[in-house]
Length: 362
Ligand code: SF4
Ligand code: SF4
Image (cartoon, rainbow, N blue to C red):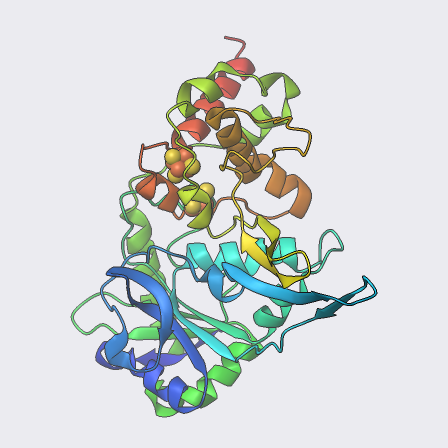
């Protein structure tokens, strides 16, 4: 049994103080630029405690928006001196992650950067992953845009979490603590008596299960997308009319990719002069007009709808084919925050419907 005890709700965020005092970097929902976002905190009073889903994911703490790869300096003989920066990978605890983000980052993103599936390892990611412990908090209700249950996940899904904390319902709620990894076990040592163990573990497990079931019942965006992959696997559907019809309003801002827990595209850019400067690794987006622009001037994805088609394919086909991982965890951010209301679930529902019609011969 993974249940290790419980924390009283009023003491939950005291975890920040305990972990900070122990010298760990703590990432939790806080206020950044007036918005609830994951950020570094050092005390419980810096945390936003009433939140559903922070605007960003915590992926930037394993895959920074921008970082220096090396500096370059041209020598007198024309050769270059390359110097890598001193890197620090602090022991980090992410507190209050939501299960959809945890699966997306510690599962899907790790499948891309971790080298397990296709032999390429990004050591900058894997080193950070090695020193990161994720404490997920089960959701007790969905945001209007959430659809994780449609994606085979759920508000209390433990995949990828080192620790999962679920608040029970009823008159005397407690926060049930479950541990799923050695890193989670080590974390308990830091939490000490914050995690009480004076109750029957099977009773806690039952209350935690009931809380998860109640949360699931509150999901309203639940739909059948079982045929989407089959639809996308058919090359004849690449030019289906729905892509242009649904995607022309996209203004190529890239918000949907930057907020997504599984989007992983990046670019290398040289900043400085030809003789000296730095090479940086920086987030990129398949939605931006210059993403696939060739040096010849040829642009294979000229329009915003063609670029969004690529995003849809990435989430519902390419991720699964290439990395055997879930491309979309149903976090709903891209649905909620697209400035022109491009909705990836409407693509999924229409693709599903079209494939169903094929199957019944209509
Ligand atoms: S789909 Fe929406 S959020 Fe994504 S690039 Fe287009 S306009 Fe921006
Ligand atoms: S595609 Fe959209 S809903 Fe799916 S994980 Fe990414 S941001 Fe969330």
